[in-house]
Length: 332
Image (cartoon, rainbow, N blue to C red; front, side):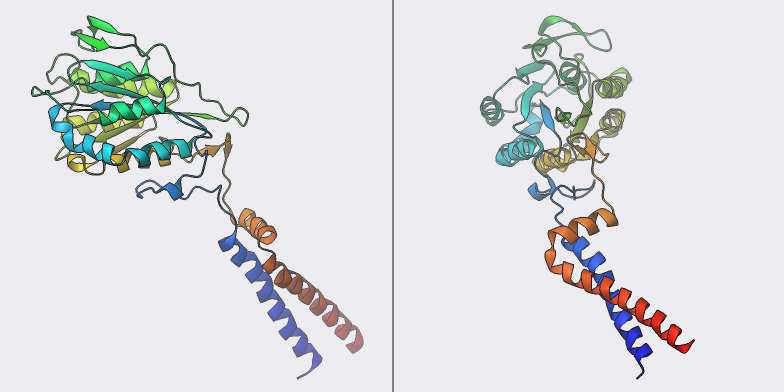
């Protein structure tokens, strides 16, 4: 075997080491800041890097009529995990509010509430009444999105029917989303959970109320609020589903079906893991770059074990080039 063949073997081996250096670190690179969750996947706490959503405002809007027992029990059972997910998504501790509804709206806690008080109120929810369908889901959402004050029988719904809101939601407003990085960006999420179509304060089905749901999604988007709609009926009732899908889409939010309430808490966690929307999130206002070169550089400097083959690969390639050049000069 002549020296030129030896040089080729050295060069080939060196190049393979160099390629391994570029690929393997990418697999082992520190990717704590890279969000692994994607729509359609069941989220776990590992899918929520700390502070991924910036400063979080989360308003839960819950149908507490008699048919909602399964969904509410599921949330209670997993409430600690839901709260932990919200706090993990936040840079510090999320602001959480709670609104319930039947044919009227009740603000139990605005966004100034302590988490302890919200947890107590959720655990105390007792689904009752609501035998006449549908419910005031659109007006509850209206209360949440537009920070409306209490109104005792004097507030008109989308079809001019008067109804009641108990409690104020105008004392603590939603955050104004910022692009960051200082201060951290704000993420506003409003999640509505129900098992029937919206009917304003009228307790009746009307296309005006379904249209109102979509309109509220547009109003939410203008305020930087992502609306998450979780439908928990036995089947996806078309009137309810179509309106909720439009509502979520108009606010860059997420629609989820949790049959008979099973998986309601998981649906909330999934929405939180996506920062309320279907687009990639930002950390401190900056989009997360995910590409081969960034992972290579990260891996190269965070996994020093692979520095040796990198140096060997570069040095070997250089030696082959020099040897080949000298061999040609000698032949000439």
